[in-house]
Image (cartoon, rainbow, N blue to C red):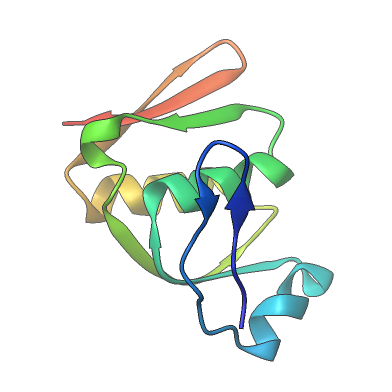
Length: 99
């Protein structure tokens, strides 16, 4: 099990964690199970040089799947095709916004 904590928000809810998810980064994979777009963006920000942010109005959309951590562009393209969002890119920043 896992729990997240921050000074601003305190403790989050206890979540079930699967061993394959914990070691996925070692093989260059990101595994999402019902993750919000904010969680996906946070994980992508660990791997991509361009900062990704999410508009609050679409931040709660959920995504599940296994993705290559070196393929951020492909994941963002998948998100645009699968959800009512688009990715705006400017300089070294990307923002996921409603269509």
